[in-house]
Amino acid sequence: MEFSRRQFFLLSGFGIFFTGCNGKSDKETSETKAVTNADPCSDFSDVSETELKKRQQLGYVKQSPSTESYCSNCQLWLPPKESKDCGNCQIFKGPVLAQGYCTYWAPQMS
Image (cartoon, rainbow, N blue to C red; front, top):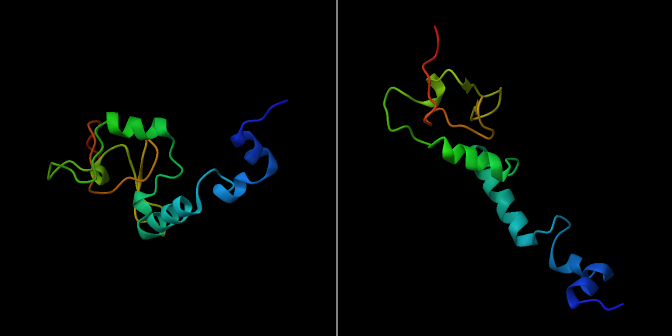
């Protein structure tokens, strides 16, 4: 049975020296943590690629182009939980800024 060089390194445990246990290099992991700690509202590490695309398709932006329509006064807005800086949305996952906006904005019902 023949092994490629890559298979040899992975099967022998040498692959651990090149990447972390999660397949990311130590540099990538530390950079991700630094971004996460710097601004939790920009942490998309738990958001799937599908959900990120959904946010994009819905036209979500961090700063609303309108002075009257923004996430925190939208019917779909989920306010931040205690000790959190950003909220969420009912139609897509991930952090949502109060001053953000998407094309599904709907006025809150009184």
